[in-house]
Image 1 (cartoon, one colour):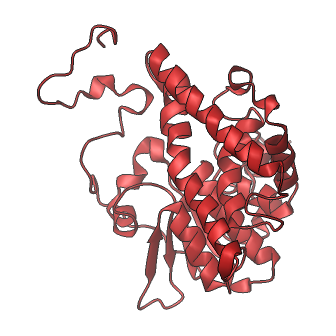
Image 2: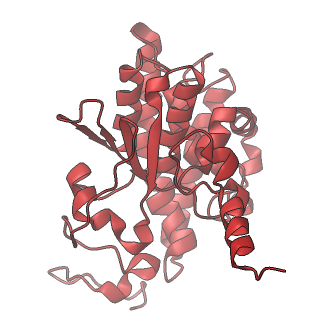
Image 3: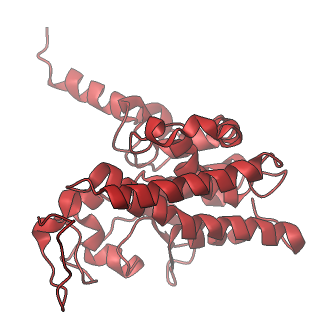
Length: 301
């Protein structure tokens, strides 16, 4: 890879896979499927195809919150899509999300006319409206405020993930200018939230909404030092109001459940790689699956 200080862009950009860093095997400049693979379908009307990244966690938290409210129609199957293995480029997934990004939702309430929904913000709004405007004010200034913060997250988080996170944690070379540029923006965004949460309990006001559900997986984890190993670098402890809010949201049982779904890293007890029933949280986390497999493979005494 050329030294960034001497690099001059050519007249016409050419794709060089070797410059892709950690994600070189899956990043490419064209869209569409790379292979034929149908998606599995479970028994619930809502079929989620995802991974426990911040964008995926938004949707599983929303679904668990809806179930906690008593919306039995929000029962769902959550299928694991391993993006590091290119599963998002399978033909079945691309048919649900032509952008090949997780999460993707297929609503099969009417199996003859399934509804596809992609982009996490769109999925949150779709689910809210499907279940009586849950976690989303119905009208007026409160709705406008909530939607403004929801779309603030959609527009801002790419600077944190694809910007700061990529150049600080994943890029094959450390580029001072890029890290400084995106660290500054990440801290500015945290300050936006901090100033807001100094005067409101939740992001959109006094009530917990889809704005909190969307923002927490990104900024809540960032401010707790659980993203990119960057807590000290960004001095996240300074954002005391965001820390207060992050801890408050993290205590919600539905948030704790939602964060486990489709998760493939961290403590094994925190990983429910696929979720097809509420009882799976008690019986099918990865620690229990591996313990059962070890017991089955051990020689009888």
